[in-house]
Image: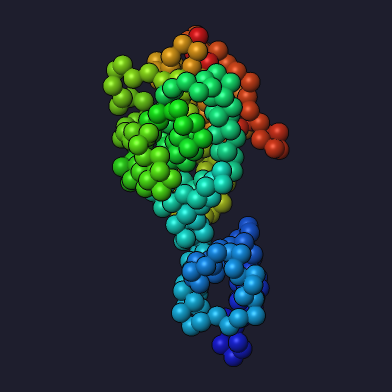
Length: 292
């Protein structure tokens, strides 16, 4: 940033958006706004009424460091420590995946089934591989009759999920369990719904993802193995073991493994495969199944 001119909020945003675009950012203007709001300690909307104001030295120093790290590939969500999901703000760290819009299709499918099959009655939900806890927290928030078990193999991820549950005041209805899928639960634990956003990226597909994803997000939460279905192959029978009769399993997938994922479900005689949920682009995103 040249030092010879007055750096107003508007000029900082314009210069930074151009700079980040040259460094490969997918949404350079948005990134610039989020980072400047963070450096300035304000909301993004406040920037629009401050375009002509000169940025303080403190703001410019903090902003410069954030922009440097963003240009080096660090995701914006990790820089500011939060990300919005389903109209709620969630804490994130490099120990958890950054919430993505595609996962909202999984949450909506779960909430729709709750309304259809369990309107008002107490229910139990298992969120397998909870990460930052977005599914567990949103389920507890939007289905007040639910008690949720949030499971993750990572203690660090569980701590982020606990903080998010506290932030949204649903911690009294979420139990946090450290474990590998459903294996660490008591033998008699049963659920009305099992929901999961499992690792489903193949090792070859991982190499095609954006650099900020490959180099900064936790690999264990992304990559399942050579095929991309290795975790799903364990999740499906484990969920069938834990579902009550008539209960539902829902899990997120990549469109690339849709056929394979459906075949895994269809091969379990205890489950009845339901319709696949597609995103706005018509791509397969969520597999559904019912316990017979």
